[in-house]
Amino acid sequence: MRPGGTNRAAWSRLAAVCAVACALGLGAARVRAQDAAAPYVPLESQLLLQARPEQGLLVLHSGYRNHEWVDADAVVWLGAGEEREADVLSASVGFREPRGIGQGRLGRFVLATGAVRPVHIDGAIVMGRVPAGASVELFAGMPVVPEFGERDFDWLVGGRLAQRLFSERFGLGVSYLHRRDAGQIASEEAGADLSLRPLDWLTLSAVTAWDVVHRGLADARISLRAQQREVVVELFGSRRVAAWLLPATSLFSTISDARSQELGTDVTWYAFPRLDLGGVVALEAADGDLGYRAELRGRLRLDPEGHGELWAAASRRELDAAAWSGARIAIVAPLARRLRANAGIELVAPDHPAQDGELWPWARLGASYALTDHWLLAAALEGKATPTYRRELTGLLRVSYAARVEP
Image (cartoon, rainbow, N blue to C red; front, top):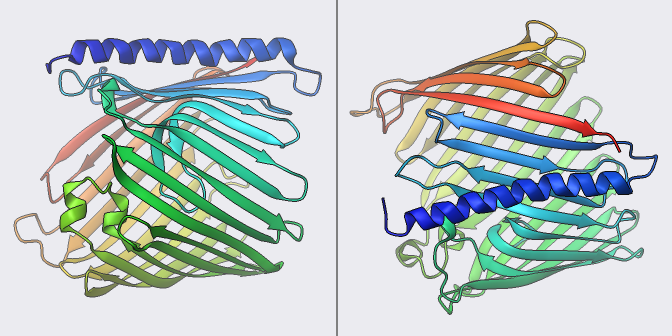
């Protein structure tokens, strides 16, 4: 075990207990303050165990329907023996003004706003809106260190200004993020996001980000979506820089500046009330190499309520040495009122298998059973072969609890 691992594990478990108490305590507090329009509070928890009991996730959530004020959630990694101690992935409390004037979140969470890159943060974010359609977001905190490790003057700040007009048919936002690791600048970005709906059937969205440290365009994405009756057509394009995904202090950011571009279309046809057909065709370029990807897919709903579904897809991709063809099929079927089964299989055939095998299979078989109105038990078994492992078998167990706490 690493030095200090026991202390970090103790702090992680303590934080997990605090997160549980926070989620349940907020639920009880809100129950006393609810009005007749919100007669219950949903409390949810999930326990996911993989391979062995000490390896898995604990997911907790306490939210409020109808004029919600507060919610709390936590995701706790249970550890994997001596290889990885228990850790809190997220534990936060959110506040919301019922009329939508403002909201905020405090704790550990993944921050994703506007055009700047998502960050895992220990901190806070607040947002305010005005009836004219303008909004402002401000956030600050420290980048998350795994297992509550030591920090050395790491922090980040940023914000976003946005304006929506014409019954929300037009929206424009400007974002900024400044991050430092050990006192040195790690990343600095400025970005803009645009949404436009000139017609009821036509929508345009675009996101762009400028990397101030590398002095160049880091990310650019655009999508034009049109829908006419049963057919939806989307044209999309993107350009990304690999170094933009990593802190400026990372070794890989100094030796790799690969750029990737993609241009393509996605078509979906709602052929029948229960049948959807579609496909994707896109040209790709990465670090000077040209290629493409294509996919045909279909989904059949087995009952009017959508409790059972059948998916099928066939794919093809070529980009430099990554050239392969694949097919997959999956089904979810209700066997009884409380019992649901699911299964899936996928086969991938590489053009250049070398020593990794001529075929990479993947299969999953699982089922879920509602023990009561509150408890759900689910289990799955997955087997696969990859370029890394010739064979791998994994089991997953999920235990969920959901309740409506009456005031």
